[in-house]
Amino acid sequence: MKTLFFIIDKAMHGNVCAQEFFDIALMAAAFDQKVVLLFEADGVNALVKNQQPEALQLKNITPILNALEIYDIKEVLVEKE
Image (cartoon, rainbow, N blue to C red):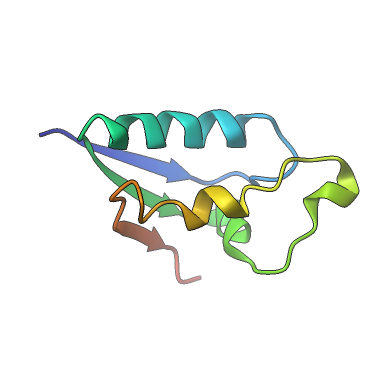
C-alpha cells in the first residue's frame, strides 16, 4: 500500500482547488491508498468551525472534512503555529 501525503497550505474557501484536492484525496483512500493530510499556513483555516462560505457563494467543505473517517483517513496533521 502506498502512502499519499497531501499538504494543504492555501485557504480552502476562496478557490476551486479545494473541492478538487479533496476529490483526489478521497478517491485515493477509496482505492485503499493510505492518505495523510497536513494542514499548514493558510490551510489551517479550513479547520475553523462555524464558517459560512455560502455567504461568499463558495462550496462548504465541512461535510468533506467530516467524511474523512468514513474513508479511513486517520492521519490529519496540523501545524501548531
